[in-house]
Amino acid sequence: MRTTATTLFLLCCGTGALRLFGAKAVGKTGDAENGSVVFNQCVVCHSERVADVPNPGPDLRGIVGRAAGSVPGYRYSRALRNAQRSWTDFTLDAFIADPQAAVPGNTMAFPGIADETQRRDLIAHLRTLK
Image (cartoon, rainbow, N blue to C red):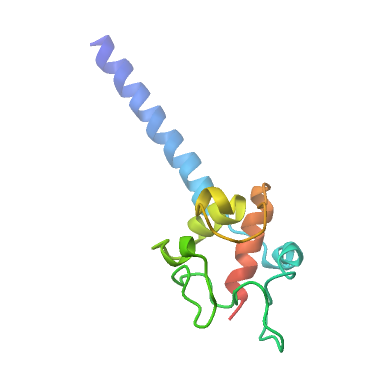
């Protein structure tokens, strides 16, 4: 009986921890205004609006929910063309954190952003780009 009670206790604690930490990780939303400041790291290659001169990087307007490697007229690396993923908060977060680890062989010359809050804020800003 004691084993059953201990198992039940551990199961309840584990489930509660999963709910607590899972909700915390999923429930976090970024600050788009702060994200626009973080985006200053990206403007070397990406623009927030239609540019007169082509940028080295693809247009990021509407990126959230878009298939990777799918902007018409942009020449993507083979890695991104074949990535077979949509840009969700989760996949963008992984890519922004470490582009080469997320999609090995891509040609984006950016080391990534280690700070979770900055990535979350940047993704919130990207959501505003239409």
